[in-house]
Image: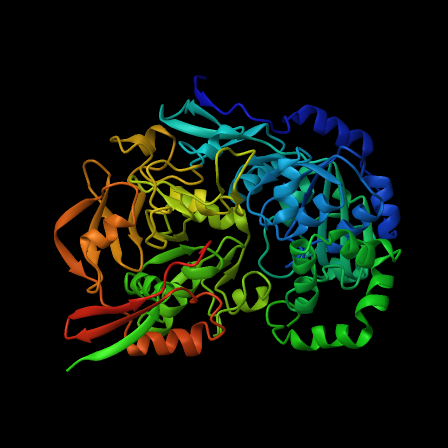
Length: 322
Length: 287
């Protein structure tokens, strides 16, 4: 196969056989409860230096509680897939957790700009679709997939190759599969084994989970396995892919979980202001380090009354819970 | 009989773009900002059945106005869709050729319609100003049959050389350049819409060509706000200023918060098809 052009940047190298061996040797295939606290899940399944991919973001059904736990446990030198990312990357960089970011789209302000200038974080440019497609390749167990974009642009230079299509003879781009060390996915419902339901349009929860070595699911609600088995079509991620099930109501806070609660705009304004004013340390102290869990954070800094309002204001239920 | 009308540069860009949209086509639009507002304006005013997809996998929603906030109001943005899928699925649909038009905003555009939404400054590692990144723009601009780009008419936006090419136009402009780069055949940028002008692309050279002009602006006004000389069509279409109904719907229904339509104010005196510039605000820093 002729390589016509290739990017020479840095990317996580695909190794499908190593991934298969990891799955063979490490995944729990039995029906075993995986319910644990966010502290235990992150302690057991996120290691310094890991490549972390997550579905959605801090504004929409993202694994916000798990990200805060990563900050709380001071994980270091993580490499993240920032596709369709809000200020998630900002929070993780401000906390010193992340030093490499594959970019699709992310909210960028002074935290990332200054960290990049100081050499504390490296950015590698892809696109939302390309990152999602790399995860698809990872979830299929193949080393790469062809795609018909990225070519000709500066984004190509990171890790895409232009080859001669062995079937048509035309030029075609290929991108490397992405098999993250860890996937974080926040879901609507999940049973104790990890059978997970996700409601609404949504980025790549399935690809992200299936491509990863270790999978942490945070869930708004734990449902019985009996309920799962009565409506199996709704299961998007099967239990054997899942290593930890963390029950975290409002685990997407301050973002919205569509159909369940609204985003907390005052909080988002507070985090935005903290970045503008160079006060991310204070923000992280308040929202992460001064508390030991999501539950305590909600109790101390948000309050049941406000949470009830955020739930009541999310009036659209159609398609999610109706 | 003269009439005075005041609108923002972004209102003109949105109204002009909305007029280019039709109910019998499928649109792949950026998930927020001017592209989505233009689509919603077209749906409200003249094409209620116009269908669009966004990169979170929402297909053909019927959102309630005002336009839901970018990402944060996700249930509003995907309300009453024909289907809720995911990012890969809508990408497949674009790859299959279902999506006629991509609607996107750009930070910098060059003379072949390539564009930048990543950073401006001397080097990737040392940006003067960093933006969100390509997002879904690279795939939209590659896979949709045609792309409509929305941007302000400013010299720093129409540049000889992009600081970074996030997304493809006609690349180096040579025949078959996109195909040689592995992109689908017969695709590419179609219109670039600014507050003063509409551009298309010369079929042979693929260079950007001025083809429409606001009645209050001249060709010189447009060229003065570009780093390079565009081709100019032999006859220029007249771009109507935003109409009273368009502005009323845009301001009162689609974007009553003014979040997206805000910009520099332009006041013109209308006399039939012609219009005279009364005054315009200077561009805001960073706009």
